[in-house]
Length: 83
Image (tube, rainbow, N blue to C red; front, side, top):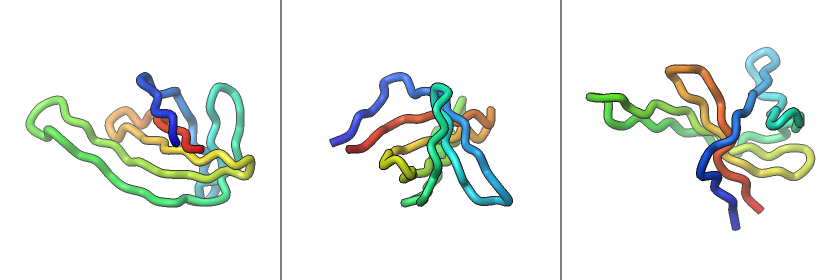
């Protein structure tokens, strides 16, 4: 089961020497222990297109989630939390 947010939550990814080490959402820091998968979505290139990098993460406190980064703005968002 998973929870998909209709309005994704703002998130911050913390990197250390190119390695993803933490996810910060709503002021809570979650230590990243594993990146389960990564993929890129690019659509509608001929107009205001979507260009995102997605990452599925597992954190030390057991959170498994999908976050995405908007490649144009650089902002990151929490989109889905899985049970």
